[in-house]
Every structure is written in C-alpha cells, then in structure tokens.
Length: 68
Image 1 (cartoon, rainbow, N blue to C red):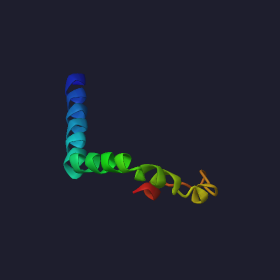
Image 2 (cartoon, rainbow, N blue to C red):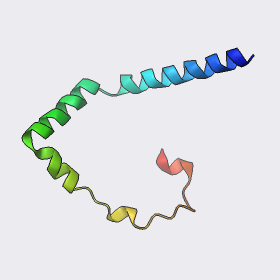
Image 3 (tube, one colour):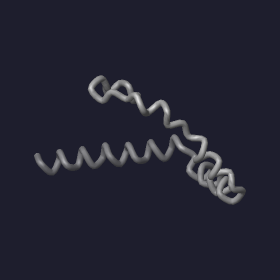
C-alpha cells in the first residue's frame, strides 16, 4: 500500500512538471532573456521593478486564493 501511495505521488509530480514545460515555451523565453542580456536591456528591466506595492502586505489577511 505504501508503495502504491508513493507511486501515485510520483506520477502526479511528473505530470505536473510535464504540464509546466508544455505550457511554457522554454526556448523562446531563453532566447528572449539572452537577447536582453546581450543588448543590456535586462538591467533596465530589473531597475524598473516597483516594490512600493509590497510595503503594505498584511500576512494575517492572506488567503491561498489570492495567489491564483
């Protein structure tokens, strides 16, 4: 029974990983980031991140549905 439970968890994890890679075009994203680094745009992108919205986080009111 323990073996079947571990096998089921492993299958769910593998299917989740496969689905993640199917939904994202890894080659396109890597090429995009490579071109940004090569042209120096990545530094501008990092500098333009807005951290002001993170100042007023109240961790007591966070719900799991806030992240989906």
